[in-house]
Length: 478
Image (cartoon, rainbow, N blue to C red; front, top):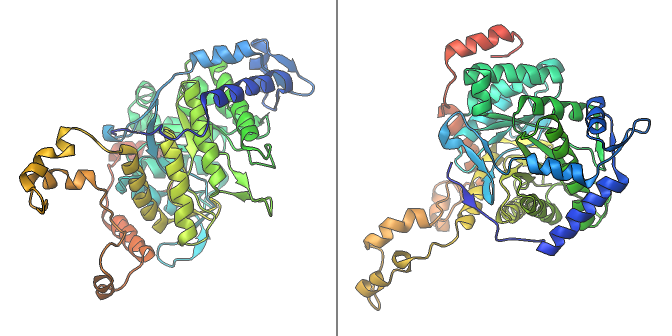
């Protein structure tokens, strides 16, 4: 996939970055982390970190952090099953996609909120496959109709079967991870082929403040052993699990993320790992989590800068809303944070499509609307191309004073690539809009989502491979 670059928005100066990085190193050295994973505790003991086994407290010296950073790849390619969907995560390349583990969806046909089901993962993956400004598929919902032990394999299989874009997801059991890996190897052709072109990747969270829990610590160790890409997001919330100041939140986030990067490199030097951030803020009046605040955008834009300060690929969050419906709040919260984080040059912006209501609910129509927002954001990142032809002096000479540019070849050459062409935004005069039903953006988005689901056919997986997977894993649903 052709990369568009950001990097023009920098909420932190170079000196700010240095100060936060140095403070984070002090935090790791002097305060340390609580580590509940026995495997991770042993890794730190072997690396000669300062480990208090009784308190499960680990203090990480600067040298261990530095060694981990030196072995971490500075770029990662997250592959699609089709080459055109490969994501080159490095520098200031920007991609935008889905995210979340929403428990609910807004039904496309009833327009009412209900529990998310496995069929929603299939349908959302197919929508994502067809929407050109959603570049990857982070599995966005939890299938409430499955037994917990069957969730991982079904979430990944339903996603891969319905999109050839890169698929990333969280994992709920270690056995589930092993099943997903075996299934992905079948689709790739072999274990070696999956490592060469990983079209799946994983997420292992950090618990703020300064805590590596047992499950996610063990999960990180297992994925690192396999050498597959993994994102390690911390999710500090201002005033609750991090200081109320944004600089303080970033310091804790940076320390927590560095710790997870170090763990992966202790397991397997060279593990492809993404510096990751899912941080947000709390409402000053209620102290509840919010997802669409402008501060969330600032924190995630700054996190992308911190990752680049260390020359690491990064994963951030933007494009969410606390609104429960498609309204003005929904639009400005999503557009503002998506634009901020994209302009910062973040490589992999997740949650940037489909979520409403504090990221608790996925909405079919919202994917279509967010595809349009993302398209405008990507157009901003492309900037303005300035050369002799685009300056158009020769065209001015030809047309002259009082002339018209409509019929010029220069206009037809550049019109559709210079200007973003919306699919659902309405730019017609009111009279024409009223004559065709006076449909609002919500109605048009619902129509487009239904049309895609009725007609779009993603790249299939050969029937022989599907048969083998279902034989290996009878719990996989059709």
